[in-house]
Image (cartoon, helix red, strand yellow):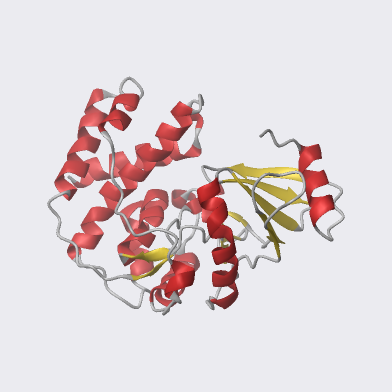
Length: 290
């Protein structure tokens, strides 16, 4: 179903008490179309049934989660909206902009790393209601051979070989099995900061799950590399094992490639994606450390 600005405005008008006058596409992800309404509201339209089924659980979960940074609290949950075939949700827009708009090397992260260390400690020490938390079992990131095939000719053979080597080497790592509450998608897109790069919110709890705490450091590694992860760990209440720290690059590279695969499958040029710059930065850092 094609969602135009006019359709989104009409759907919000017909299904809520909001009387919108403007709409702006905030983002298109694998799971949602996200729209900014009047600069005050965020409405999420799921792209498939699997995600739609989890929205009500997300609403209940975020009502009960208590951490020291704002998170979206779903105020509108419309199970059978007029004008759309899946449930939709809406919540007040949080202040700040996405961390993806900032480059690690060009900003001070001293306050942000302290805040993230505290927040991750709070999340990972939360004892959740199992029924509200588990939308799917924890699965460590993996990659399919055809995803490597898609990258052929898109990056150099040496880069592709290096990436394969990092991922292959990680397969020998033995992880402990601490099943804690994890955000599940703590990427730069879902971290909100103000103009001085101080944390103002954490978005998108759709992928919350019980899993290995190292998983919540993958997105931090993708954005700022090992140095940024170490900064956050200085303020983190728990301790990652050597194996958990060592597996972050492999999980990060797998996540990069998964995102690029979707870009290519949908006919977009992934080299124009901001993640491509981060991908190259992380490869170069790993090569220097090797």
